[in-house]
Image (cartoon, rainbow, N blue to C red; front, side, top):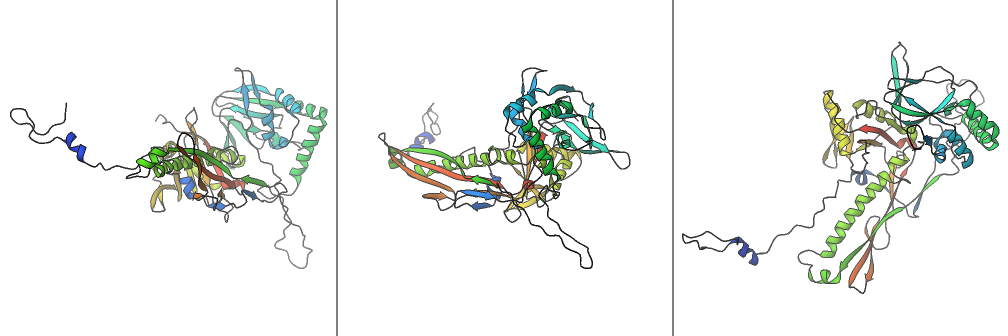
Length: 468
């Protein structure tokens, strides 16, 4: 029905209706809105280093203790589970070993073992007779406390290993016991089988021998090559000398990029620019999308992203499933000067539920005029770029930032040609035969972790509500 004004007694309108009146009115319009824009706290809180040469080299002291990663598996049935041979190099003892034939033979020697909840996999003080790879499940490492109580030392989960630290020791024994919290599956490798393979493979024997000798060199508690220092002496003793050795193969970070081509028809840019510039609005939303993808890459990129570059020694699993104050306290204790937490919004809500159950009220921190929830004074920033798995689990990241504190820094280059924002340029690409104007929009960036303990990750955080 047409929009009309008030009707007289005979049904005829007595004034003009709103629909007709709008034909003479000027509408007030908003700028184009975009639901995909987030707070992007990671981009805001990172200190950014200007990388003029396009490459950033991280020099470190010589590291003797080799870091460990997570192995991966392939499964063709309940009893046909194998470790992917190439991922065995994630184990410290096999780091850098390149003979794929030997790795394939080694992977074929592992045997499948199913674990029941509450079953003890190994006991403290017993000889190490097997090495273990955890396919799936959560296992608790514990030992007897000073007064006979059980002291929980941590958890072991999917992709972790137990036993290879005994290589090179005369009579290796387990330092702690391990018990299955959930049903799980592990792969076992008898030490006799490994020794037989080492005896038949000179290259593997030489590699393991070099690894064992390296672990005997003096090192500090962080695994760096140590140098002699004396304290508390009297008289005139001879003071030992030494030097600080450097890593001869430091890691270099090259700037990555996110690009797109923006297309705007010349007719649109010529005729429809009042009251808003069409090209400017297209460019504004395009840059928002690029910045969103930039933050996703800083979290998830396999080359430099936080989740893939956090050291294995800085990864812990939630003790009970949901993120608890105890879990965040342990994450805090693993580094100095933690500046911020990053968590998926659902993980933040899950943490607050655990605080509510304990009657705790998390504090807040003032960040650029914003009141942000905090734990122990460290702000907790929501970050939807942290993935949620199919099992409804996620991760919480703790960061120390800045070059002065040997933390995490963002990398970009300023002063690039046709720069529109720091590290981002917009380059005119011409007008094609269809009268389409094209602009190349590029953001250059990367991220560097200066020392391993600058990043910590709380893994396997359950997000769902638990039954009371």
